[in-house]
Length: 404
Image 1 (cartoon, helix red, strand yellow):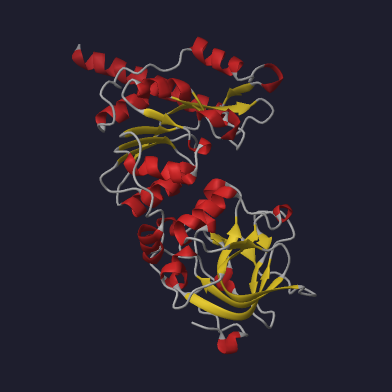
Image 2 (image 1 turned 90 degrees about the vertical axis):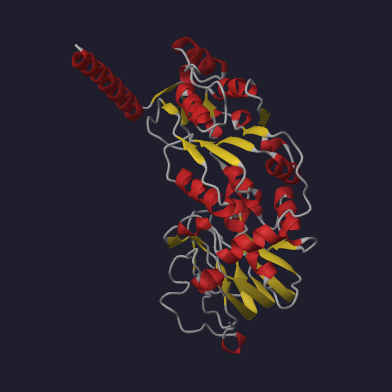
């Protein structure tokens, strides 16, 4: 569909881009082509930003917006007073370019499905930066991802309002929200084009770890102990941030058993995962994000992952005793071991021990999380744990009384 005359905005369809993108289609699988489009990068660093695309007459092109769940996080920008930069040729709109690995995978890739549906070639993929201070910089993993999807097609990020001679604007085929399942066109394009030249290479069993990222970056108290238990079961511990995308994908393709702490690495795995692989996800937080991650794996791989709620408790800063990006979970190895054993991931997990009070205190001290940097157990988690213990004791008493 092309804007009338290539310049003015078409009439708004109430089921179109003014509503969230959906995996069953609609505008999320449409392509519009703009002549003399205007790409406007953000000027403020915020979640919701005035940024995106304008038609040549300055009206807003809603097809170019990035949605997250039920709302767009790029909204109509003001028409620029002047445009000093022009891109000639035919370009594909890539949208917002995230430096955060997980958001890049899920939100910056969302329009690349159109590469499998272009009637004529484009000169490159055009992005605007998520953070204004990043400017036109592109990172190695971003360029590698595009190469694995589009070969030598150039990537360009613009940091100032830019006129584009011809801009192909696909709908948002992937993202966070209902669209996490991906549209059929997006999934098919990923399966047919992405990392096709990467051959499987690696062990049959891997644990995708976060332990070297640190507790304050989404780590888990007791993860190193979980790794030691998994090594005894023949698993290789894999730290994806230390390897190229190509190496990560080779490992993910080779593995028959994949256990992972929930996080961005599973978004990448989902792009090459298969129904015959067994996948387990160990939750590291209380968050709706893990539901989206499980839906992503299930939809792309046709493989429902085993989701293990293996948190014993959560640790929060003394100065801010609430769950936040600064808090971290503590693993319950007993719960994880039983779940993995019952699902056939390990043989001897039924007796995995939880951390003792002494072990826990030593880990916190070793990681410098005492004194002024002290963390405390989440009051919310502590109440739940105490309540669960009381219920378990009550059930045991009632069971004994029934026997007597």
